Image 1 (spheres, one colour):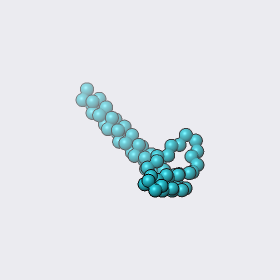
Image 2: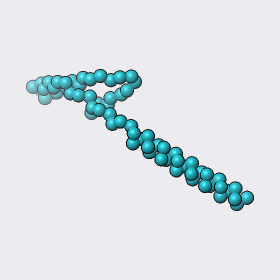
Image 3: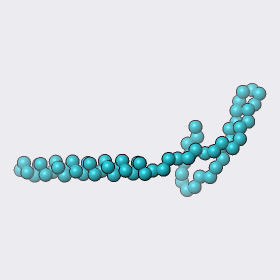
Image 4: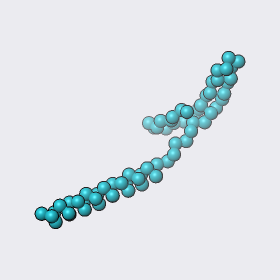
Length: 66
């Protein structure tokens, strides 16, 4: 019985390590998102600013505005 418990523990450890390296490898391969370029800026005398960003987004990609 102790042999089965030890074997199961080692298999669980090996699976966890394999999963951790797979997830970490995929995160490193993901391309960094490019910012949407600023096309024009209009500053009003009231202090309000209008910032126009323009670009192309393909597929179901999302762009975060900052």
